[in-house]
Length: 308
Image 1 (tube, one colour):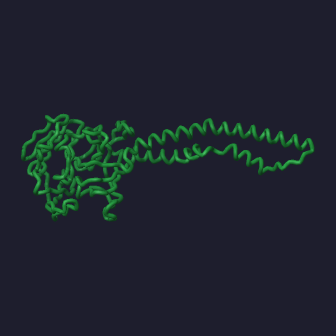
Image 2: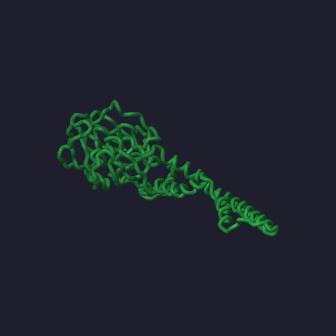
Image 3: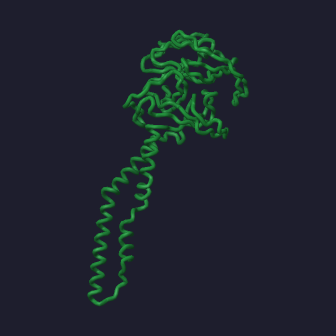
């Protein structure tokens, strides 16, 4: 499922604004403010000299301390464009830092992660748990943790790096993943499933089978549509290291290559994921989704909370 950050490519917009306002702020602090001070000092000296001459000639003047202060204030006043830049720069820099290295907001636009995440959910993504990355280019510079099975992860879609996707980590490097009859087997161990009450899909108004899937100790809910096949072979694309997977009408088996991850949506029969477009390289990782802070369409405070 495609994710859209709140204002599109907001990171690049913030970066450009931060650089522009930062350059103007530095230019003012280290050069323009000094030039205004020099101009104010010269003007005040000229004013004092002019006043002194008039007084010496016996001419009364209206010179006062407040008038002198007005002249100084007018000459030291920042131009509007500099004043606004100086005010916005620290705010923009703070937002850019928080968003690039700590937490980033996203909005869920589709239903591939239902029932875990609903359409309209606004979520927060931890940007540092999988390592510190340079903003914009997303290059990792500090390794911290590796993604684990069961994590809900945001990443750059391998076939279009301009898009952010969100899925659940099913397989880590070296794992052998088998999906047959809508059930997972990881490294030869069958994943356990506990039936729950059927789930009413708000989009299709169709009830779907709901289960608790226990993926190596991480329990979460998934949906299955009895009407849909286990795998639609016609939708499987060519992707890097395609040879690591074997497909048939009953399902598939993939061995996750080093430095890659296998991702699937919790709404299993309504999710375009690694089954169809392949593995997610480590360099594509954006962060770990960990919190729902609002839902724009439901207005339901029960949606607020951590993501499992």
